[in-house]
Image (cartoon, rainbow over all chains, first blue to last red; front, side, top):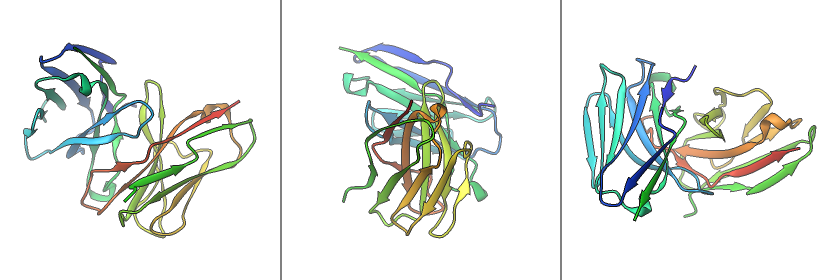
Length: 114
Length: 113
């Protein structure tokens, strides 16, 4: 039972264009969402997060949008750069006694072409 | 400040052998986690330790044991390795119960033949 799903295994984008990565979840108890970036042979690194009380959070070129009614979040990268090529994971937490426990999606491989 | 460190980086085991994966963090974090990453599966939580002296099962705990040796160290043990445990293992930590941002180590690539 995959509670967090990233249905696109891969995404290819031209440098300078927008990258949109999508994530869906099924557990209505999730109230905090994160995006992680992972390069080969390295551990994931935190990118950006959003609380369920918000519908948008920005950090430089990265913006995360949350649509609670659709149980959907997306990560926008504008403009995309070749260095953004990596695997992107979305993750969710239910708070409460689940503090710190994250449920991850399967990941999306982003390739940004020069 | 090394963050989260893991040893070894690579390991090959034969079926039935045992081994312990080591993890340490120098950020004075309370909570620590062990994940495994398999192709197409994302990261799945094996065990976690909300604070020193406590450990709890995650999503896929079967075949593993853990020890929170002190606040810095959290080890993962495979008592009798199986080919299904071939994976990349990541350790992570987070500072407080109200913090969701986890810091990850570089991973251990384990192959069981």
